[in-house]
Image 1 (spheres, rainbow, N blue to C red):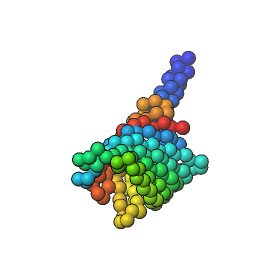
Image 2 (cartoon, helix red, strand yellow):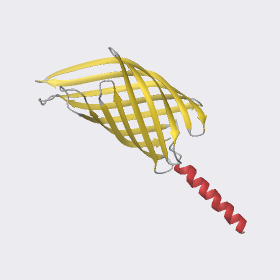
Image 3 (cartoon, rainbow, N blue to C red):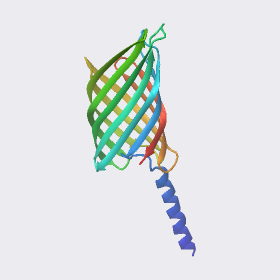
Image 4 (cartoon, rainbow, N blue to C red):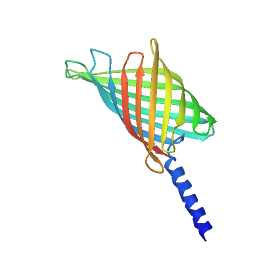
Length: 198
């Protein structure tokens, strides 16, 4: 009987640690986060917005990615605001070097749309861009994951973004998420939100 109780206790302990790590190192998830951007520009104030991402992995080592981002930027010294909407779509390849450590490669596109209103006149602009990048995911502990990414975006000139993401598992399928990124223009983007594993 004691042996049976010991085995049950061991199984419960194992299942608890496995469940706590469930939202981490997965490729089927949905992210929603508040985003704040500090721009290195005298013309635009800091921006606030919403950042969402979705990932779906139909087969091992491959995932389809997408996302929607909204940011509102105010022009310095005026009451004019610019609403920026962007949609991303792409694919991701990943390879597990060892348990808890994956290398990533991604390519895709971004559709950007900006609109504002000046003296009652609505002004809109849109643009298409492509991106590519490499990254890694590393499970620090059963409950903490750290990701690092370098992304190239095809602008008028080459633009590089360097980012790091931390995830903390708080339940079987939910993790808290924090992200920091910086680009060539020295713009700093901070996000904080949640990840829901599917």
